[in-house]
Image 1: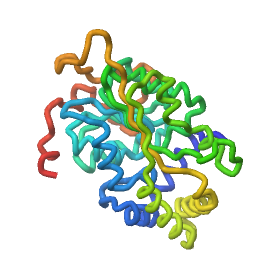
Image 2: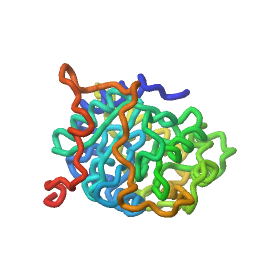
Image 3: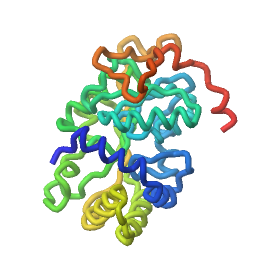
Image 4: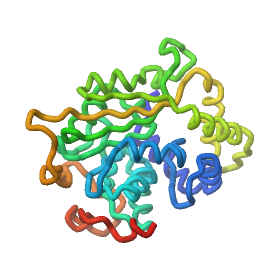
Length: 299
């Protein structure tokens, strides 16, 4: 069944009250305590994704389906990029904003969809999508949206799982249709590379094996975690872990000059100020600086 925004609102709300689940995931994925994970991308994987994005200080990074914001915040801190996170779960956006505030990081988290981000065309320099492209109701539309918001020469990096046999009915339907190379190529990307990541997969297996052995008690996040582990281990050998990277073609005008880099995305009329309570959400020009924040150099 499609996973709705309301479903994920509840899922993220459950996670907010489950330190036990976060501890298990951090240990197996080798994540620091401050990084709230959304999926099973580990510390080594974050480094590989950061390298593949080829970000420079001041570039605008869109973390698409950003979840609790941990991955995008970490990559922006490493690269000096300006972070914009989009997720269709209002609860995820709220938690991501809270995390950025606790870490003292500048970022813009807003509600939007995989296929309708609300951002302008050619408005970002890079797009990251961690383990989420399979949730798009219309995958082709999601790939086209990634292409639409990217400036010429911009980079897209997606992580996900792909079926060894797309016709194998034992694999979840939303994973059977994942083909990162075909999706990115059809959307008009060039330099498309899809690499299998067996080391990431080994960390996942160990995490799932511990998860099935736990007694979740009355913790709904742990119950969901154990159930996901049972399903994942049943089909573990039927899918592969992959990372895809691609480049948006340059226009006839040639490569972007520094002065041509896209500006901050304009907030759409449909965007909501989720998570700011009774306070007025700061305008984009108040929340961002194109200069590298001092704390990134000392982190």
